[in-house]
Image (cartoon, rainbow, N blue to C red; front, side, top):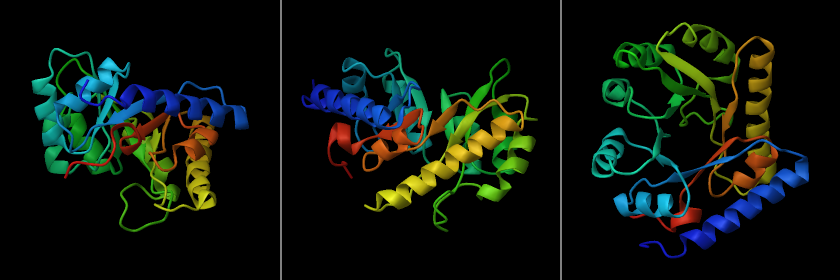
Length: 228
């Protein structure tokens, strides 16, 4: 295996997820998304060999190249980075889940580009940290966006995604994740089916799990420092 420490690192992550759930009484399954951006196809193979199926990429072009190179592998590809509208044509129908839909124009473009007979699963990205440089719909605008996006017949809205502020302050991390969970719960009460909460990365996934994450996006903690 190209990443010999990966099985041990993954076992440690699973233990930490279980401990985080035990601390707050969470019982939902948590999908570990192996973030392989900037690593080569060997990282994806290593993840699959270690027992992971979900792989996350930030850039459409890099993801599609890896998909083509690894067509023999059973992988659920997740697009977790910002999706530019002019890349929607290439992304539609190529990912098990697109995490970063944050405006109606992007949703409409994806809807137009999804191949016949296919439904593209998406998450709505919400800016719960209040940082202007981050993508995501503003929390107060989420209900209206949800109501609009569910009208896109080739899209299936599966849940919400957010990124916490890059900080060691667990309280500020928790505030962002708790906000997303509250928004999800309110949307469910309004009639939306949103089973997924994608939140938490290598530096804050335990707090995210404590707050109800169903998906965590992990790169460095599994593979080590980035290449490039």
